[in-house]
Length: 150
Image 1 (spheres, rainbow, N blue to C red):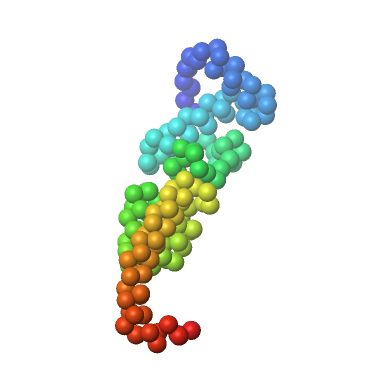
Image 2 (image 1 turned 90 degrees about the horizontal axis):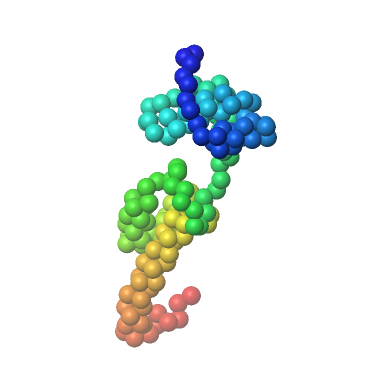
């Protein structure tokens, strides 16, 4: 390994030392290696972390959380505008159950994007009911025997 010297403010080093003392990292060196790998992995598409047990350390230090309303997490889900477009397309075709299934499978319950998509779907549903209600009433006036259908 290549050695590189970097200067940090005392307050930063103090925080890192407290993480080591708490047992979240085995040493300051492990913290620095992990941190560097983590940032490079986030910034570069094709970077593969080289820190030994990187995934285990990440899982322990930064556990995955379920995305919930009000958070800024935009991690693994599909791009939101693409989801809006897809849900809209299904709703316009009257495939409300398919749209609900898509939302349920792509987003965690309570996710802010899921809530917005469900609200969009609800609006399309109510719009469809409003548009079809006059047609149904007119049809029943023309053929009263339809009122007795089960």
